[in-house]
Image (cartoon, rainbow, N blue to C red; front, side, top):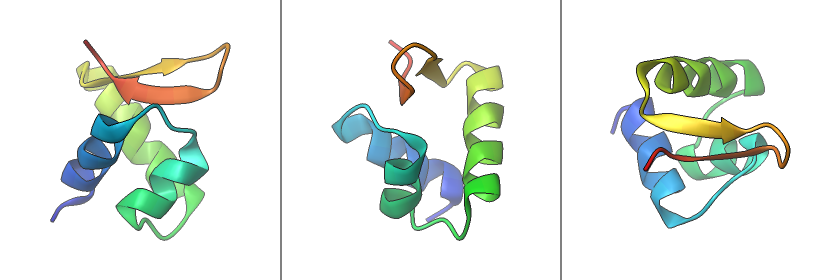
Length: 59
């Protein structure tokens, strides 16, 4: 499974902080995870709540 699919699957379950996403998606480090999350946010697939620090699927 690709990293993007792993992240989307993880975020389907609940809102998560970056370290939770890293664990669920089995990503090696924070930089790789952050890079994927930011790219997906720019594409409009996910969103980030800056006040709470949670990533979620964009609805």
